[in-house]
Length: 269
Image (cartoon, rainbow, N blue to C red; front, side, top):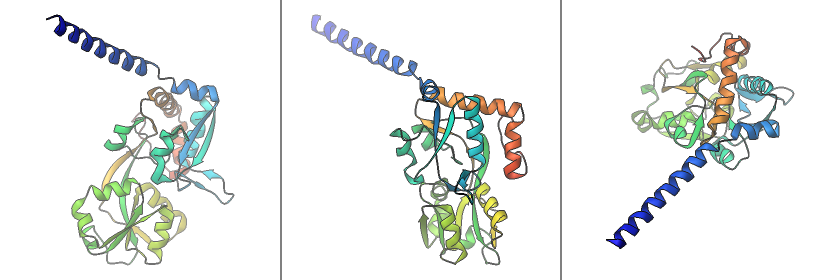
């Protein structure tokens, strides 16, 4: 009996110690204070992802998400620092501390939610298929036996994986480091179609005037959010609260209209 009692006490002590440690860990989220103290938020992005984030003719990083991040940081009285990253290694960049967040048309998915902390959605989007005008492709089924492409590590890849029948029907899938490279390959006939974000596809077609068209049938709908290291809820809330304030005073709608011609945001709606 005495031995049993001692074992029970030891088990209870271990459990209480673990609980206390967990409580302490949860209670020491000072992610916002750290960013405020260093005076900057390092934003990881793909700098070839118009209109969310890309380089202009002067090689300056610009875009819709760039303007949002700049405004949020201005209201927090810190500087926004934009760090181009390999999109296929974005989680590693975040977890190693090279960046403070991922903010660049970043789709909220169940897998990412399991490994990161996100803001609420601020924009709704979809994964679509872009083909050349005049081609015989009018639906997903019409691409059976053909070659498609998408950006490695992107939501487009996840959307294709989430449609196994469509994926199985394809002849080949080619991964690109950047969407712009994929669009160039589509233009010269290297691939038959490119899976890409709807907002990005519309922007590229409108600005480039290329002979592309978007199939009406989408692969999936999705939401954009800002991603942070798992457990950094304080920092996520700090950014989100500023986006809410920007919605209330009209700044969010103004920035969206400058880039898209209309307010496409979903904050407060």
